[in-house]
Length: 474
Image 1 (spheres, rainbow, N blue to C red):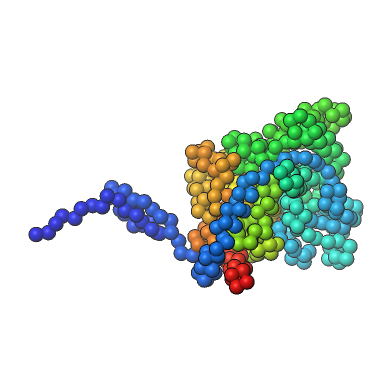
Image 2: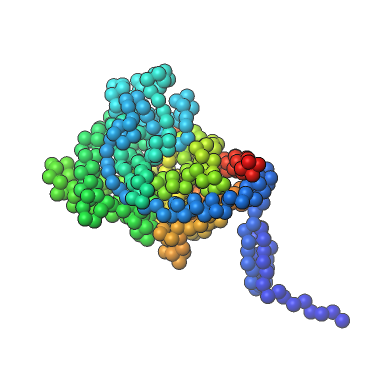
């Protein structure tokens, strides 16, 4: 006599969703586990790194250091004063690169920068200057405690924000934001681009310097950029491609000091109008705030946490806490997104800029759930934005309680990209980004979503394994 088969109370499904969907269709509760095989060829290195007795404590220290940093705005001044840049020295976004391999937008920004500094009269004449290379030098922003959006070019006369962690005195820097469209950071160098940059150096920079210093030295103390980020994430920004709330809150803090500075009223009005109409102005504070936090986690032996993701338009590179200043690079990818006007995929350059430091710190693409309106700028859908933030929790060491996502019950943003988790799951960090035209001088052509080249994470894992083996042998 046969016994009737009893339906299970619940089922756990691992991997492919087909089985889970079939069971759910029969009204049986299913718990799905999104298991994936590790990236090919990483098994041995994963075993070595995961067995490293230093790893757990090192990663806990790295994450704690990041979460403890407070970024405050303490000054605005020219790069020549802050970084010691001299005529002919240029900084750029991403890992190191020479002119010969530079992308169109990076070349365009360097050409415009050369004209801005008076090295050439016509930006087109700068090509020969950089080809010769004897009187100019290129170096990554990251090597100078700085970050630069898109091409990221910094020249000696450009004014920069200075952010400081009051507990440690550590500082980071970033140039002032030019706005969108035909701007230097997207590789444009037309006369109006250079005119705007000269105005920023002659008028905007000094006005901001006076206001920032006045607020810094007041009873209220310096502008708390970390605190503004906390509030903007509650107001619909994700602080990479949407900075509307952050820009307006910065204006709230600085405008009274600008108005009462005694500066020419027309200049003050022009500066306020420029910042207020540039929704991306706060990005250039969010980026160094994120770098300030992540730099605190550098050089912790055994830590597998990513401390920088950056692109120069040719290469995409990452740096990891436990491997020092080494860059692990692969080819920059084309973003998938929305285009301006008649531009299309053939017009776009591969991904470029230091702004992925926001995702590295847990905002930007990692916080898309807090800014569903961002999908109208970079593509995708609102459910995609929610799913992205949830998915990024699978490759991070923890979450940031300061930066929470209201729609996800105020869960903290996923923070601390872990090389081992990326290699174990195959899930790549999600970045939302602007797109520059591939031809020098074009400017912005769109915005979209992109991920790093997969191979850079196994490369970093191999270096971590080698370091772990050496530490054990020693």
